Length: 465
Ligand SMILES: *Cc1c(COP(=O)(O)O)cnc(C)c1O
Image (tube, rainbow, N blue to C red; front, side):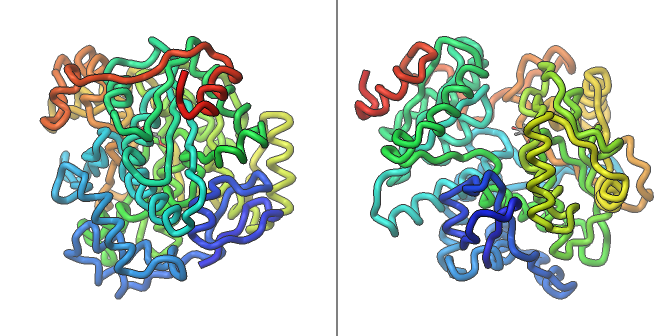
């Protein structure tokens, strides 16, 4: 399998190349040169397979030429063995047609673990084959992504991770999930500034090409193809359990970056009978405006109870736009150049109609979100987190045929957002057993000013102050 850049000016690469590169050198995103096709028989053959065996079958075509089945299986066993549920991503039935797909049984209680745990093992394997310099992953986090990324690479050979968070501005659960990871290759930095300051510093470090080369900087954000690939698996896993290939299934996906729902699009392109993908946004609604009215324009970010969806630029949307442009990279590159300049593009009616054959979209406001959390708690006995509630609210408003089961992706464990959960539902969401002592664990992090020079000096000095 070869991967091409959406903007057409970077060399095609194999799976190993795109995993280690992340963003293409022309600023585009890597996509498979073509979608692997699964026949009815291929899908029927997934019935009853374990999560790991499903993962091997679904990801096999994407890694061909780089990993054989046994190597892929070993990596999946290492990654998904860390999950706290034997089914890895179990389905829970809420009423006659609605289901939750629980993606939060990984080490940091959010769906990002599904992809990042595998990515950590892929990095270790590929870097050990090269025997080159360590990869230094740098990132900025407002909470969720940081802990999932740290957990994914903690203790992995050949990788260092430096994670910046705004001092005093992430919740205690989120901070502790990062700072209590004491492996030698994990470096938490609390900066005296905001999340935007942290992000700007990371961006500036990447733009300093000497520094970037000196430390072989890498990123783990959701533009990395390997992350999306790992997410395709659970669409197959859930749909097969609900009757695919003989029955169509719809999915409702709470999204901000268009990452998770793009994986569902890939599953459909591969032949999974997906009736519809419901793109659920909160009031930070660029994706809703784009899909319902063609208005892809950046607004201001309003903080909500679903902070992981408080996003105004959906980096993975470019991958869909590439297909909507008929995979014409030159034309897409021109569109993206216009977007980067004016922060707004209008999607043509023809493209929007094409997207509407696969996607619908709903924007969920805070009242609907809260009502859905209460419905789930009172009527279905499930305490759900605010992100999941946005997906479920959109699912419950669907006008799809009644016989189509609708699966909402449950993206975070309610214990990650205890304040919102108890305020809205009156219920407590206790931490799962293995995190129960989180508040008494030793923490380690350094506090630094929001200065790129100081942070680079800290990294240059081998993580010494
Ligand atoms: C990251 C995240 C999302 C959004 O994921 P996308 O990559 O934007 O699709 C939704 N819910 C939770 C809990 C998350 O952490």
